[in-house]
Amino acid sequence: MIPPTAQAQSRHEGIILSLTADLKPVRRLPPPGWRALLWLALVATIAFTLAMVADRTAVVSRLTAAPDIWLSASGSALTMVLAAIAAFQLSLPDRSPLWALLPLPAALLWIGASGAGCLRTWLVPGTHAAVLDDTKDCLVFILALSVPLSALLLGMLRRGYTLRPGLTAAVAGFASAAAAATLLVLFHPYDASATDVVVHVVAVALVIVANRAYGGRLLQAANS
Amino acid sequence: MVRAETRQTSPDDTGRDDASPDDARRCAWMAAAQAGDQAAYGALLRDCVPVIEKVARRQGVSADRIDDVVQETLLTVHRARQTYDPARSFTAWLAVLAERRAIDLMRKTGRHAVREVHAPLAYERHADESAAPRRSAYDAAATHRLSEAVADLPLRQREAVQQLVLQERSLTETAAATGRSKGSLKVNLHRALKSLRARLGPEG
Image (cartoon, rainbow over all chains, first blue to last red; front, side, top):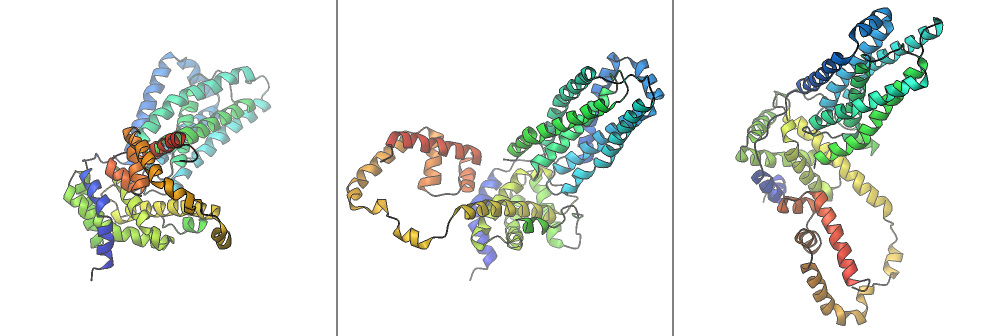
């Protein structure tokens, strides 16, 4: 009498033999934190390059004059870091989907500080408020910069094996959009205003949705 | 299927369970497999089978579909092997993959079951056209035409038809045997059926 597990094993012997024959040595993935750090280093390089062309004294004076811009930029930078870590965690099959919540506190700081900026614009007369024409540039900047950053991040995430491609790609999109919004501070010629905040939220949402759709499919395809 | 989702074990509590000698053995095998050790890999995959079966049963997969979950999970282990970190529990890693494949399979079969209707009387009364006596005379000729048409297909399409339809092998088995992806097999089968349909016509 053959024990049931031995029977089951022999039923799968064909696939086991073909997988064994197909075995090639693989390079184990570095820990997710290290992989996130690599992407963040590439973003920092882009930031450095952009800072070369930006008007640095204007950036510094803006940041010192309006502390809430400083706060909202820290919020978006922190969102970028946490979302990148979350995306690399989600690219591993045995990690909890709850990692997707990691960037949310930083995102609240980001939105909260930007909202406070709008309030100030309303309360202090004479502040240069953005009109829709200016904000169109913002939107284009965030979208245009998010494309290469997302592509880079998704390319790195493909090496993992995510069981939730849509969620992973959406979080990757969040990281890229937050990075683009942080870099925007270098070129932002005016204070935060209500239209400005709305445009930022719309741009970030567009990047997340596009990543979820296209990036999700890309990560799904990478799995097979 | 919500039930299956909520029953998932928390995937993040995968700190190594040092108390289990089974897990320590599997971790060592997987680490060796990542370095390309085929013998360790074979031993590991055979050792995985009962674990996957247990997970599939716990998820509520019906007995006749458990083998499908096992095969899909083994393939997933193969494709995801670079993501395993030997500092963590292998058994927990495997269980998460098996759970996901079990849920996928139940979703798929659930969708099929919704489309199917249980109507034994209608089934009994439905005329079986293939049983009509006038057709039997044409059967030999039809079979000949079909095999000719299949032989004329391009290599990949012919392979898909022969393996999946004529030999009734599963997508997973065929993919493993031919080295093609399941997606490519599906596409080729679809194209093959389309060109066969065009060539043989509605009466073919």
